[in-house]
Amino acid sequence: MKIIICGAGQVGESIAAHLSEEENDVTIIDQNQDRIRKVLDHCDVSGVEGLASYPEVLQKAGIEEADMIIAVTQSDEVNMIVCQIAHSMFSTPLKIARIRSQSYLDPRIEKIYNSENLPIDFKISPELEVSDAVSRRLQLPGAFDVGNFVDGKLQIIGVICEEDCPLLGVSTKHLKDIFPDLKINIVAIIRAGEIIITRDGSNKMEPFDRVYFVCDADQIMRCMVAFGHEEKAANSIIIAGGGEIGKNTINLLNDKMKEINISIIENNWDQANHLAEKFSKISVINGDALDQDILTEAGISNVETFVSLTNNDEVNILSALLAKRSGATRAVTLINKPSYIPLINTLGVNSVISPAQITVSSILSKIRSGSIKAIHSIIEDKGEFIEARALESSKIVGKPLKDLKLPKSICVGAVFRENDLIIPQGSTIIEVNDIIVVFSDNNSIKKLESILSIRMDLV
Image (cartoon, rainbow, N blue to C red; front, side, top):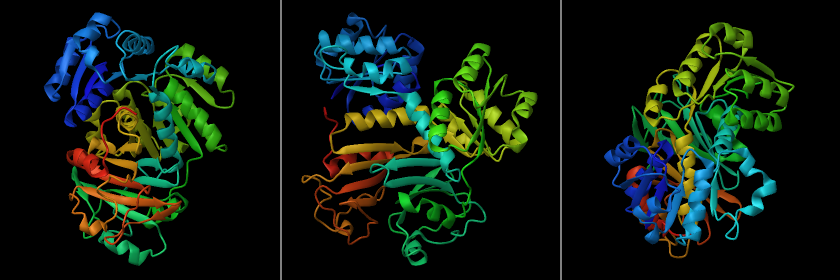
């Protein structure tokens, strides 16, 4: 497929890397030559310098032959115009735009997004999706990663095996013996920066392993207790950063965790006043989250969770570390630069949120074929969980899993059949229309698409 990506920031670069690895013809557009050069150094793509909303720049990028355009520049308006020009002048089949402003996402104007008015086929809102991810982590504080699949009936959980974890030394296949009525399946382990796919069940858990498992959503707390994580959802939280993500997170927490006590630290005076007017029942402090006196004023010594959501990675990292040193039990931080994530995991920050990974997962779920329902890229971008419907043409249908000779880097984590969760074994046979959740490392995504009969196709 011929795909044009507008915007060579972190999200654009991540999308370009994924799509080029899947043997697509990718061209990326940006006004900044240095950003384009950085993408070209790491990805097998072409680059065009210029403003993406100019028709001549789109033509230079090959818009006439493009099957898809993905507009993820920093400007909502540019992204919208790109889609309009691609549709009206060049009849581009599929148009995706990143829309950040909540004004453009107001339900009252939803009807304008159509082929007659503003032709955007899919809108991606990083702020809303990141806020939802933050909310999920806060509701399940023992996890460093959380994903919802199968309309919330299945959870993907990432936990750290602490030194006192009850399951240390236990092989993954023996979980069924220890917990016979627990619908849980350990799918992957990250150990010393390397990923281990636990398909044969022989791997034993070691201290500080980062374990990914799938489980029935109704059994989450029992699964967490099995790993020694009995943390309760926080009832006191300090949020650093009152931008769109911070505001959306507060709204979600007020809806889902009604008894929670929230304080927010915002460095900008005008924004702090706006927050104080909007959220009359929370404490708003105008100041720098790196200032010990400000943290003390916010009550850091007695708070359970500190959440850093500013637009500056360095501020987020340092304020999270300072908060933990000052008494916060847990720290959750937003990190935009993927290269920082492995470092953060060694510093004692409990959970990292990556907007780039979340946005890329959302976009990939839109541009893969209609059998894909959701994608969740794991922390450190070492692989993907994919939720898909088993098609009649899928190679995975009709045979016992043990006879399929799947690559060792691919693991079927769960099967949903008529609302019944099946933890797969070697004898399990996948049927047409089953919902399956599969994990693959990054090197085998293309192979998994072939097995599932998934194509990078226009939806």
